[in-house]
Image (cartoon, rainbow, N blue to C red):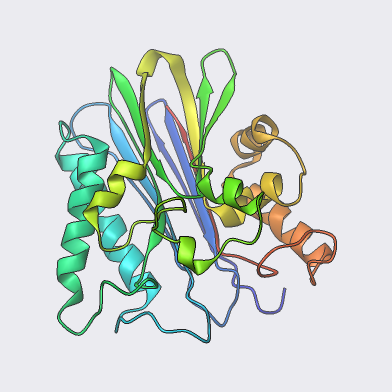
Length: 273
């Protein structure tokens, strides 16, 4: 399709574990602001994955920063994955707080980190070992956990959805009391994240989606979270992104399905433990 890059897809198989990743930018003229990565330590049977969805600034507004959103997501995501992997006893919220602080220090004196539009992102991070699967979700990216009984449980930070149900979501509600929160420059934001732990023996697989991929459920209503997970598990993350793009092309002006932009960056990670 004109204006769309083909994206990237990666498939990893290690022992009994299967991991697949796919990401695709929404517009050929703009860099992909989603970030996703997986780490499998050389020792042990654990692992970690990170997905960030960078927040696109409005075309008519600045950010107070000399860096763009992909710069931010790459550094925050890389720092978070490193900490989640190497500091196995450090809670994920603390890993995110330290990653935010590291990234803030990397900005330099030329960046106004108090600006409401300073580069920022949604966050999903999951980590597992033989005993437990840990998770953290901040803002509107999605984590899906499949139990050994086949039940799919969505883990959502639904603040934006609850605000949208009351009326238009405004910039003044960003990282503000009574609003919604993203990872930017303040490590204290981790207090707003949705976190949890599930016994490893109860989890068969998991999937994480940026909101550009979650449109299949949340915007187009093509199925529920269980059907979305089944699609990713059977056909792979790229298939879900393809379905989203097909639905977007069928409604280019957002007449039938209202959304902020026709196409959005989309990223999906699937891990079968």
